[in-house]
Length: 232
Image 1 (cartoon, helix red, strand yellow):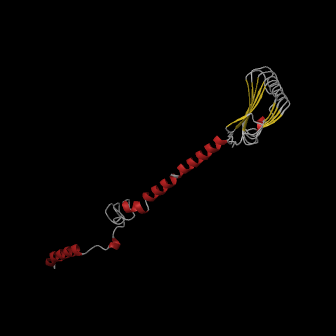
Image 2: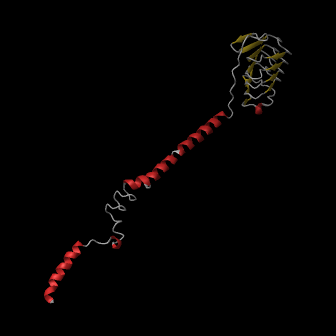
């Protein structure tokens, strides 16, 4: 009996080498190790390798994140553009361009689309109702004592209008200047009382008075309703 033990041991050793281990009884942590298996750190489907990153890993995260992140560019662009555009437009006074045409009879001359009306001399246009033509800018020159004293000047409804006052007392004294939607200005020269008692009735356009001396318009009604208001 004892003589058979060495042969039995040799047989068991040979059989043990030929028997493959059953995968059902393997250590579950073995396949999840650092090898090249399907769940390892190598090039497997769900690992940290390229396929995993491409399908569900950092690839999607970075792609979606950067894509949405570019929305900040759109946000900044829209915000700044609209904000600046809307901010720059507030308070701006832009006059439309008068079409002009054949020079009307009430104009002394026309320079392009500007009707120039000259009241030069003593009392030449005193107590006169001066109406500017509608399709022109209007420039009224009152030069001389009482040149346009106690006159009413009606500007175009849409286009700029300028009245210059110079040459003596009451050149534009007690004048009523009725502005339209275009810019409207009265320019008072350095002579004493050149604009004494004048009134500038402002419209929607820029409304201004400039004074080279002590004489200033008596009033500027509705100036605070104009897109810009500049008294002397």
